Amino acid sequence: MRQGPEYVPGWSGRFAVGDVTVVVFARHSTRHRLPRGHELMRQQARGRPALVPETTHEWMVSVPGRPAMSVRPLPGGRFTLGGGRETYESLRDAAEALGRRADEALRATRDQDAACPDAGGEPAPAP
Image (cartoon, rainbow, N blue to C red; front, side, top):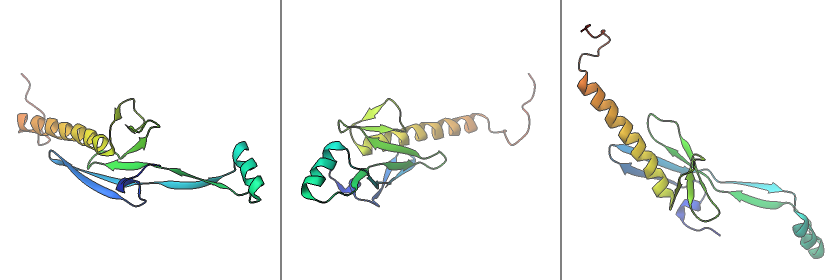
C-alpha cells in the first residue's frame, strides 16, 4: 500500500519554481468492480460475495497559463506526467518539471517582449 500525505483524498500542495507557482491536487477515485475468478472463489468460501473496491490514484498539476496535466503512479513506484515517457522519482519532481517548462516559456516570452518594445499592434518597418 502506498503511503504519504499525497495519497489522502482531497490533498493539495503548492510548489514555487522560479517565477511560477505549481498547484497540485489529488483526484483519487474508488470504483467497485465485479470480482475476478480467484476473488469470487474466496468470497464464496466465506459466504459473502460482493463487489471489490479498486482505488485509482491520480493528481492534477496546474500551472497558470497552461493546461493542467495529470500525474499517475507507475507500478514500480515512479510517476509519469501526462502519460509521457519521462518518469520521475516523486510527485514533487514531476510537478517541478512542469513548473520548469512553464518558467522557461514565461522567460522566453518576456525576453521576446523586451527585444521588441514597439510591438503594440503596429507592424515593424520594412528594411
